[in-house]
Length: 210
Image 1 (tube, rainbow, N blue to C red):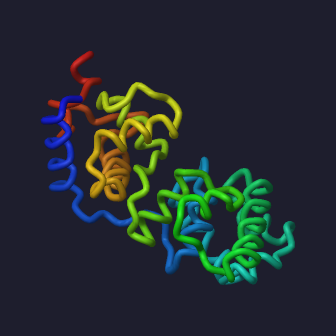
Image 2: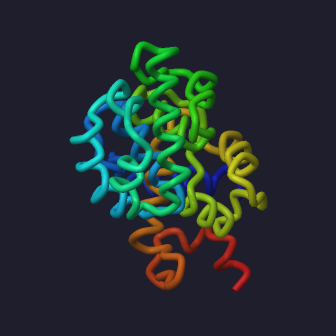
Image 3: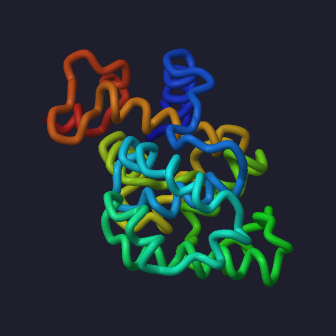
């Protein structure tokens, strides 16, 4: 996608979606971190139905670190892959307590050292909570739509992020993924894309090749 189209893309998304908020309900960095870990291969809506009970029972890293795995698994079971997620949540909380006084760290290196936390999760925490731009968050919506638009030909989140970080001005890194997620929910829906009424159709590589 040429530079002129990048500017058009950003302006169009910003005009349509503005200051769209993170879809995962949270009140602090710890809650956001737990929610993002749970969101792997799970819808945000399902996570938001699950986390109230999780945060009531385990409101802090200290409490979560002491959780018994069977009890934790029961609370998050509806999010899928619950056994692995429970292990990651508990191990993540244990490291927060042992290495960070129970607080969520604010660097990529320290975040990705936590169980269940990769670059995507770390980028969400840094961008959403700490307002630090470390890179574009690449979830399934972002991966799919950026490939359709012609922003990348890569398939892995890490390489897609590298392409997007080069194309998208740094000041938009945090909000760009939220715009694409909103667009994926509203218009560029995976199983039934509304291409005819899409505001991006004039700069979409997929549309050009149809």
